[in-house]
Image 1 (spheres, rainbow, N blue to C red):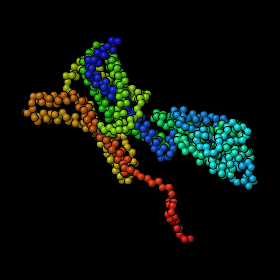
Image 2: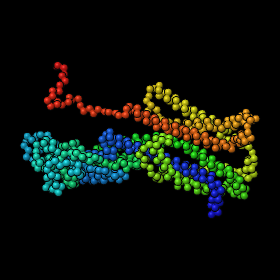
Image 3: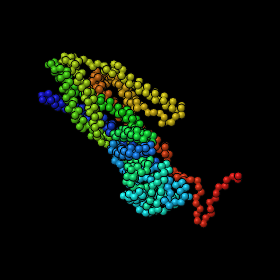
Image 4: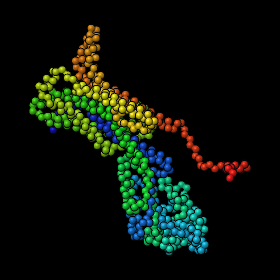
Length: 608
């Protein structure tokens, strides 16, 4: 308890510096939290837009999953019944495994093709090649429109199967409703008694999510699914040769965190079908193509965001280090006294670690909500200090955000402990001796870090210009040049390196200025110039921070505006006009003749 009391008193003694340190920690946590939040939110919107564009282009509901199975290879009726039952459960359970509700679904089963003719057909009529199959679709009466007759009775059990047919197929059979039809299996010679009791047509409104293509099954005779299951699947009175499933999943419930699970479950479904039906299984999931393209975009966006955030992260880290260093400078005498009285370096470091932990927990509580606010502001902005009326991003805090925030807090605490660790090495005598000495040359000036950073930035610029020249010489399109995220770091490196070079010559410039006007300077200005020239190292840290702040602010605003302008120009050049019109060209047939007008002229071909 005494230790915590001492820590709280120390923090209260430097309350304004501690408040600045907490503010820096909070902004650091918020910035790190906003990275996954913004990435997830913008990719979520991108995914929705691309799925909607796919729906408009292909006229397919993005969440539609279609499975087509050929069961002819399963000879044992009992095994076939068990296989169909287990497949029903696995396929229909797909929505639960991917946590997406089903908007709609239907099961479609069919027998093998049979020869069809009237029960009272003559020998001549039996020679006609009219084929069809018995088919059952779940909720069939909701997917079609009954034109004439009635719905089949699923409870009928006299070996006469009541069915629904299309008008065109009934005409092909040359029969009417309630006239019995015979279905002949050419392979086994087995016959079935079939009674058409109703005529159906496609429903105009239909099912917008999982429409049933009645025209694709115009040669089928539709019976209740209950009857089909009882007579054919379980009893085996006719060979079941085809099973189809059509599921419409609610893709609006798909979140970026569930994409990996969706892809893995789709692959598991493919393996399940291949294991039981070999190559007689087909699965169509159009959204997977869009999702795979999305995953590639996600990787590129993550790299780009990291490159854009890196300069700001570096500036924040520098701010935390600078603030922590100021706090430690004020407490160096106290640290040296504790060391001289027998306190170990570990004990002192634990005290500062506890202090950092208190600030870190407070930053962890306030940082993620602040990161949500940052993300919403980013989503509503069109550039630097430019806001537009745009739909807000869907932002939600989850476990991954707090894990990243906790890692940011841990890293920031370690960074703030570095000055304390360095201060624990000095005794009280050494501290007084160091205070009496003049400032030494900074470490980065000794190793030439300023020159190294500028050289790296120039090298990156040279490499970029070289690739641009190669692209022009090969006549490649702009899209062929892959963006290097390091290019976003180039201005930051150049700004930091250039700033350090300026700080290297800054004391000489002040001395030159002092010498040039020594006879005319006022006492106040004279004292200021002498103080700056003799103690330039004392202000070195704050000068580096100010240089980084101004440079990064100008660069970030310019980069954001440039990226946005490039995207807008790309869209404008791609369209070419405010309105784009496309002709819907049906065919080359001449238009129909108007009443009372001349008949359209036919094109005359060459005389042959």
